[in-house]
Figure (tube, rainbow, N blue to C red):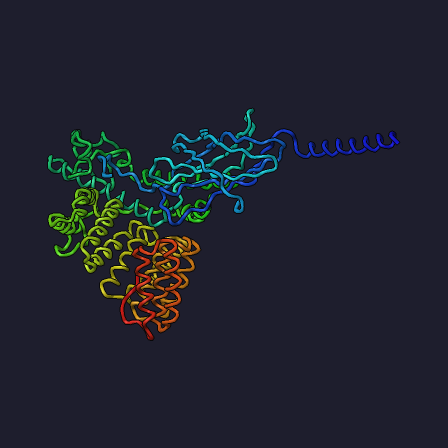
Length: 575
């Protein structure tokens, strides 16, 4: 009997030992961390570039038998390239200007990346404080801090997670990321504009040299058949070539400190195009070498390839004489030329003197900006940007939409040869032009302008871009104002759905689209539909914003108004 019992116990013990051995074989006594997934979080369209850096979403699991202590994340930078600044250097040195879905995220860590010039081979480490139990999984975010640069930069990275006392590690596949996450790629028209501006500036310097030589009683150089090839080919002491000893005066009143690009302009143009091609090719190479590419960089690649395919044709274009950049005089009663923005500045100064403190605070900046426009030229990229800002300021403080419409139309006309029709700056100026046209009384003209702009923005920036959504809002708004509330209601219904999908159901602009949808339903004769839509909107705004928020109050007032109506509205209430 005892023999039987002992034999049975021995069998059970052997079975338990075998099971324990098998379990141990399946799950080692040590911890063993595996990377489940490393991906990029999509950009947040509601945030600015500054507040929306690329974020890595890291999922790990511990298949070992002991807890794993995650200690550090190490980011190795293999390559980096700047590629956002596509402006062409001028032929003289100028003085300084004005300048895993179901797993909750347990923690977020910041990893600062180095400047691109010092990035290749760099190793950046940040501490972790994570413990993953046996058989458990964890998820955390790694926020890649943006370098202090004013340009677009692409990085090729490799991420390691170090864990436990002996610094064991797991390594992710190569990653490609871009800063900022709103990527602008130069189009052929913009690059052509840069080359044209460079050649015009060369001509400006040549004219200054001609004037100075003639004033000395010497013949001007023959720029067409025997152009000087270097500094020794011209007399000494020319302020149009050597400057007057003050770098801040270079580029002003015929004073220039010319650089190497001036002596061989066509070589400088070819060097500019070659440099641009090399930088764009590096971005493509970084993306190709990565297993995981951030969404903004992936979306930019077709535009990069399109520009690369156009660069050889630009390089093959023959040089043609350009007229010098001239300053077009503005009519005294219009703000179209903005050479110094005198009309704008006088108006702002008068309002500041009358006690407007906000204008008084911004007036010094406005004067510096106007001086920059005057110094660099109203049709230079910097001058165009300065004019844009001045018009926005003046329009905000004056409310004179008719003059603002004329200024925006003039600006768009001058942007086209420099930036091209598809550049974001041109598209944004067209947006303001359309708004001013409608607010000046031409609702049908504004609706037609926004229909064309929406088509262009959708083609260039995509349907989910903030600018595209904003222009769709204005198109629907002016369609309603032009007498088509039914079509406007349909457009606002589609826009509200897209806003909710892209920006979130509780975003202020989603609420604005829903407000206008409800209003247009009422204007189209569906008072009951307006009441229903406003009721739902007030409930959501009260939950998100609170009952006393101005937007909630406005929606509540509209709801009360439509409850008392039996027919279409007769007042204007769009937001």
